[in-house]
Image (cartoon, rainbow, N blue to C red; front, side, top):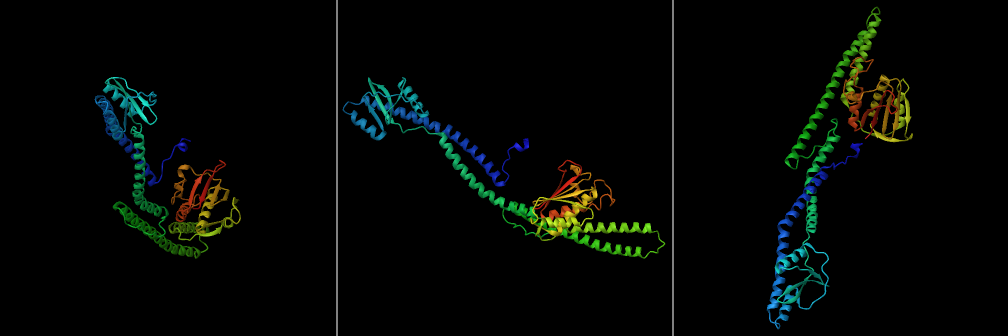
Length: 429
């Protein structure tokens, strides 16, 4: 249950790279924002508040020192050039209810310069400060549009632009890397050794070109080895069957006074040898058969009818259900699975589902640790070489090879009812 609930990360190379770069970009943006706030914004804010406080105090001092006739001209100049209003008229204004960082810093700088407590007052369009100077109670108004620099907005801009740059950059870079890797993965997934594949283009960065070149070389070598194996075993099969035929002929020409029981034993041994050679040849050849559409249920019924022992058929599809498979390969796989079940059990049931075939027997079953090994050539659970207890050991290996050749999947499970036995399943791609 814990494994099911565990969150999974992205699986593709592009998604993982984007995630890593996005996290890195966020950390870089956060670091840049903190550094900018600490070393740029804060010093500028402090200096700006100090300069504005000095301007307010200096303007008040200048207004007091000027003669009354020059004060209106000074007030006009300050309003036009500095957006600063100086008035002696007393206005009853409320105090600013919420100080921003900048205005709080400005208030403290004014308090330091005037050596008294200073309040910022809220007007209709301006912020005002009361400055007692030279016996006058002046009110100085300045623009309320002067706002504090917002580090959050700066961070949002940096993160947004950084994320966009990282995304498109990683999309460009990773796609150049991912596309060749996807081609390699696709070729590796479909390569079965029996068919020629189109060589991968050996272009791009040095590492990717080397990977494509080595993959092409490996595919050619594997295809050559499989062809040589098929040719070798086909030749051995042909050469061995010739002396087997001669031996059968020699047995047929033996005098009648020879022990007939001995002759029968020789004949059984020759038949076992011939069967072993045939299995080995089928294992080596694999298949080059082209898939075609068939009616699944009638085809399975025809295969099961070829067995002397009755086999139960359970259908979960319509009679006219069609699927695309290689008929000869499917026939061989089904016959081997059913034959294995009849050999090790007594009763076999074949279940036909939507593109899935299940073969259930009532034999001793197959332990989980042996379920992969039984598909290997000549593997025997009972470690016996007697054909009466297990045949040549190639039946399931042929099943595995044919399934790999056509992209099918085959596996073993316990019986669904919990009874002794095994359940083989075959799933078409």
